[in-house]
Length: 296
Length: 199
Picture 1 (cartoon, rainbow over the protein chains, first blue to last red):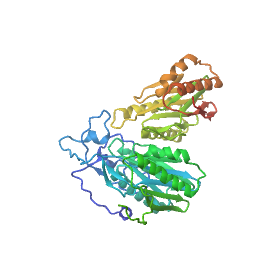
Picture 2: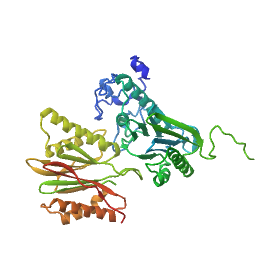
Picture 3: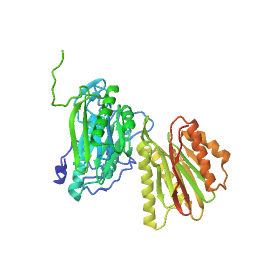
């Protein structure tokens, strides 16, 4: 994706069936029209400045009072309703916190779709660059897409300007990119955990929230994780204590929350970059490479 | 959930906002600042829907700054309030209305202090005291009872404390601390954070 842009490779997207959401031309979407970021990306008049060929299928006509862009623009006759075979669920437990040794990011690895465990080994923590990881929660597909977009935009900035974008600016960029989709069914709740001139932890949500703080937990299991974290979290934790606290918090949340479970991914970010610890199963507390014979 | 309050005195405006940033039932942050500095003597307090608050408030903030850059002088509080209201009104019947409730507090060198109440339906009222949020139901009567136009700064802070104590006593949600600021002819001053212990 990044290479495409740098080489100005233009691919004609399939347009006839899909609406460009931003071709709702005169909708008063408060999004900067100009290429404010000097990304030299194709921003046509219709595009409202969104630097992507981003086309969304028209969603079913919604009769809510406050009409968000897509639902009111969808012509009823020509609508392509996308029926999902399963209910969208947002089950997860992710957390991040700052301590004297840097930032810890932890998450469970279960992807649920309604009552089904769709995948027991999903990576919910994705590195963006050497000093930034993002934990994702919400709709899995949306998160994967936006993580990829964010990686692309950050890499482009780095290539063009010669230095990495600060984490606060990354969060603001992400928040601005998500803003046009507010009110749609997109659900993305990301926690940026990284290091630039000090540890940083910023929560960005597709609702529009952008919060910087010292500890965040996101997802259906987050109240349980907060319960454990709030009791024992201190600035002066050692690295080992912080890692075991993060695992404990996710474990307790997976115990109580049906939509979280399986293993725990854990990233530790310092001034030197991020380090991932071995995936550990919450159930048996074994390292992934250790095997024990089953007792029958 | 969120609470804003403003009290205008003879030569100052006192404003306070709670510090909780919540996401459904969880307090995500305990020290969140809901005040946006529009200019040296104007503060915008903004609560409402998650992303709308910051987006709208920053939009107004940058536009007020732009006006100053273009014209060489700052917008007065009354002008800024009307500008804000106009923007709210313009977006109200669009496809993306902003669901935000605002208090704008400022000091004009010619007209003196001013407190403006705005809500998500883009109403605007200049008032001697005002509050937003569920907490307003509990505290407006206290303000009605004890407010006088010639309050001193200390008396205004005491009145604010009375309101906070009432919230602590009767409001079901926990609002442990409030950011307090005062605007007068010298500009915006940060006062001590108002924290209330357990009942």
